[in-house]
Amino acid sequence: AFQPRVFSGIQPSGGLTLGNYLGALKRFVDMQDEGNFETIYCMVDLHAITVWQDPETLKRNTRELCAGFIASGVDPEKSILFNQSQVPEHAQLAWIFNTVARMGWLNRMTQFKDKAGKNRENASVGLFAYPSLMAADILIYHATHVPVGDDQKQHLELTRDIAAKFNHDYGVDFFPITEPVIEGAATRVMSLRDGSKKMSKSDPSDMSRINMTDDADTIAAKLRKARTDPDALPSEVKGLEDRPEARNLINIYAAFADMTPEQVLADVGGKQFSEFKPMLAELAVAKLSPISAEMSRLMQDQDEIDKILRRGAERAREITAPILAKTYDIVGM
Ligand code: ADP
Ligand code: NA
Image (cartoon, rainbow, N blue to C red; front, top):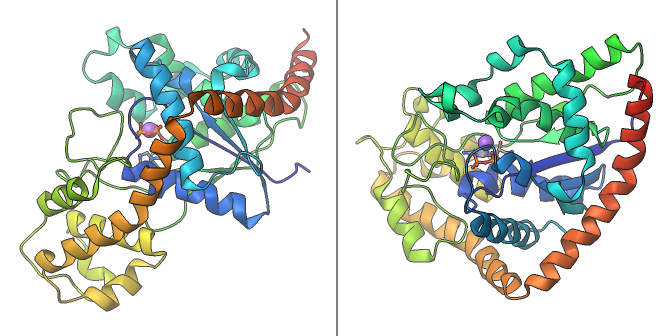
């Protein structure tokens, strides 16, 4: 049996969004504080460079992301918090997994198709192989559970396929078949200008996205401009069918308030968006502004951030080094 262990990561590929907070960071803190798991959280810079990152910006984004983790409540004493490139076993295991994963499996990944766009021939090989590295991130810890947003579901399935094929090919029971944990009201926060696209920090063209560092006026203005329909809010969830923008705003409210969408609609059903949007803005500002204030405070001491990351990488390597050594042995190296 594998010990209960959580791994998850976020790319330092831009400023953190509301989607990253509600879909990932807030859940990371819950799982850390519930105490049922050893929790391991990572800034995945090797993933970020699968699309071009300016080197200075990448360094700044990595530190800012570390500050975002801590300001959101990830405690570097309770969790292992580190930067991926400082733990070389991630990339080493990813190479083994590149030999396990099949071309056909990776060809089916929708994130690659979305990110590569029409010009697939010009996408980096790393962008294509991204899911092998993600499988390595998780399995180098023998992680049993991975809290993620809904967009990562397909990659998690591939991680399970890689673990199963490795175990089968080498006749071992070495890697766990990891469970995705996709829970809560905001597993997929959508763009505020297009209810069919997810809100993403890696989409710089979407100026409607709410950044965790936005000030109160900016958050209120972005929510005021959020696309909606002319109808009043329904009092039951079935009234949100075919109303993706309304559903998105209700889900965001519910996730911030630790309520279900049903509970939120019981309170706000019948209201117009002109009344609901300021309520949502007030709640979002109340939750995000202490975090963003703490982020800027932490960013003033970059040496301290670097120290936390170095210490986290040392702790991570206590787990990854023996697992990589055993993997090499299994493979015959
Ligand atoms: P992004 O797409 O914003 O660059 P990442 O790929 O770094 O984000 O993902 C970091 C975590 O945030 C993952 O667990 C991902 O599922 C989650 N996440 C990203 N965007 C959203 C969203 N719009 N709604 C919910 N979760 C999200
Ligand atoms: Na993503």
